[in-house]
Amino acid sequence: MNYGLLFNSGVSLLIAIGGGILTIYVLVRKRDPKVLFMSALFAAFWFCITMVYLLASARILAAFFGHYGLDRVLYQIDNAFGGAMAIPAVLMALYMLTRNKVAGGVGASLISVVWAVWVVIMVINGVSGPEVSQWHTDWDQVSAAAEYIAIFGLYLPAVLAMFSMFFGLIRVDSGMARYRLIMTALSMILTATLIIIEFLTTNPLLGIWIRLGILVAVLVGVFGYFPPKGLQARLKEG
Image 1 (spheres, rainbow, N blue to C red):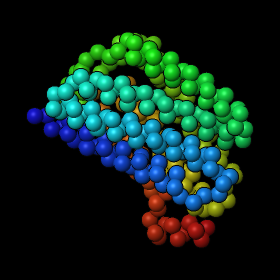
Image 2: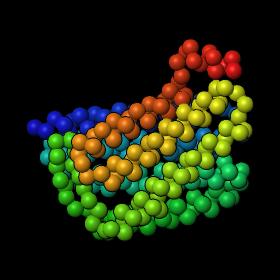
Image 3: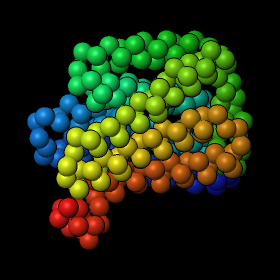
Image 4: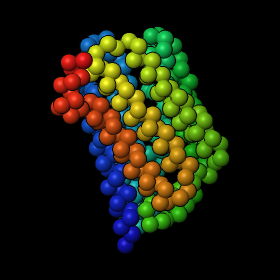
């Protein structure tokens, strides 16, 4: 039996758990009503990441037991969630830059259309494979257009949009808020960037290292909301 697949499934599950913690915490914590909209967008982003890696964990586990048909279906669904992360990311960026929900909504609507077209193309054309390695199963998009739309129409705009979060540092004055914003921005940028690299790589061993990097990136976000007690005390003083 290929126990590397089990390891990959376990790493993916840990990523999903980290993303789930962030999603739930952002939704339930007490906050100023003024940041409620932004909190919902943060939660939507982390929910997409949670679903991507929860489904990835399930599909790799299915492959471990030889259920490649289920692996294929779950691969396409987790791909759809991966592309969907661009929608809250772009809306968040435009709102932070303009403070205008209408402008953000227009940008997010355009990205939503790109995402919907991409999903339709992906479903109609399907995927080929899988190539089964020690570490994962690799499915390829049959349509080259689907790959280009995913990279240039969804993933790259999402990463570029996340850099706008650093403009928010101008508007925060407390040490804790500044720390949380920096850690969250780094976590989201690293996560999305590594997802792009994972999407492009065909090397199974590199793929598992990238997935471990995504786990670290998600943990950066977790520590952004749950800093060590000593650091938390210093940040509150600042």
